[in-house]
Amino acid sequence: MILVVNAGSSSLKVSLFQADLTQIADGIVSEIGANSTLKLGDTKSNVDAPDHAGAIAQMMTALDDAGHKATDITAVAHRVVHGGTYFSEPARVTPQVIDAIRACIPLAPLHNPVNLLGIEALAKTHPDLPQFVSFDTAFHANNPDVATRYAIPDAQYAAGIQRYGFHGSSYANMVSEFGDDLPPRLLALHLGNGASLCAIKDGKSVASSMGYSPMSGLVMGTRCGEIDGAAVLRIADELGLAGADTLLNKQSGLKGLAGDNNMKNLLERDDDDARFAVDHFCYWAARQAGSAIVAMGGVDAVAFTGGIGENAAPIRDKIMAHLACFGDVPVHVIAADEEKQIARDALTVMSRS
Image (cartoon, rainbow, N blue to C red; front, side, top):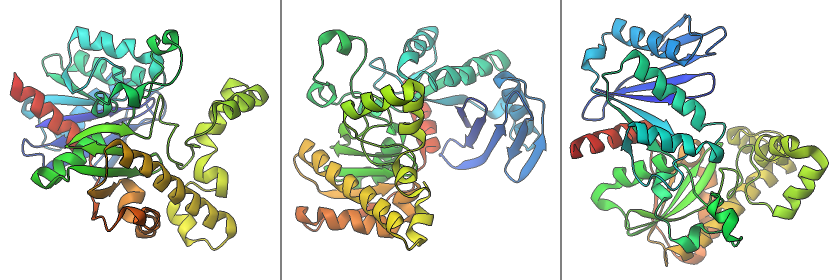
């Protein structure tokens, strides 16, 4: 069995997969370091989890009590947000891999440190279990330089300021789910509270809407998406750096336009702000899709995934109406399953050993 771990700042989510990638359990430890609770399937209980190591220990005990013995787990696979330029594919955890993840902390200061906590906690409690990592950025790591380089001086580029792209496990899962039926030029849209699109040519990412951070690109639930740098500088001047960060990442997007980042609610509302927010979301998704289509020299199919992409047919229809100028293109809906892809990644790396 493969245990997939996604460590957050105060939570630890797990999914358990059989070798054929059938998911057999999922759970979460919430409020690590405070009033911790553990949920595994339909069972919920209060637990003592002062840190991530404690959360791992509690979860492993709960899995064991549910009949999923630690001795039957062959590997643990972790989600890591940022692999920088170090990683273009999943990897087995080694001291060198740990050092590289740590070197990427300036690129993802809120995420990589807690991703490392999950890895280090497992190493303490179950040192004999092999661990593997999958990176949100890795799927885009081989984008051409012309797609990733900002037009800035070499010093800033050397410091790591470039386009990276995210949602990589979601797009990799989409490619895997298509299998032999994968279209040569696929416009892929991951639409949820976080939203992005990717130009996938012959199974490889050639361009992504997200850039240095997950803030850029499409309009999102609370993130602004693409915005002029001068506007960011003015906002930062008026609100300070922390205030600008909060505004652009947590108070903008659909929430900034209509006061709500839940697309289902906006589609049910009948007011100008809601209608404008929906139209704005779809217009900019389609407008950036045109850029992705140029990057792969045309489009053979479009695929949607993510909470909005899978469940909001009106959003898919509005975006496709904007893209009608590209002809009658087949549209697919693929269930998002990043955990399954992370387990698949671990099995792939193991098979190479």
